[in-house]
Image 1 (spheres, one colour):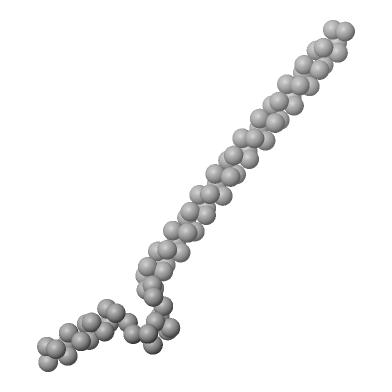
Image 2: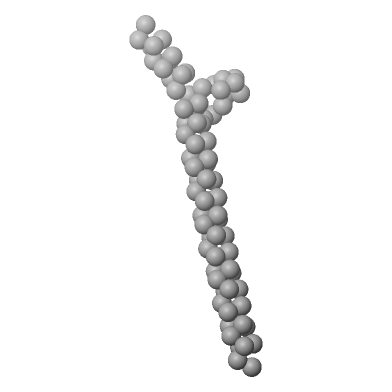
Length: 78
């Protein structure tokens, strides 16, 4: 009886090739963890891109405003 129990434990820990097609190599619990990790990584990447674009847009707007101020001042002085 003990050898039958050991065989079942071995069989459930290492699925046969027939079982791999139905369930996959990665279990459902780890599959969801990997999916969430990828989703969080993508969200963090998109957030960093958005912050970088806001920073560049802000710098561009400030540079244009400064150029307009300098252009108006030099135009009035001449």
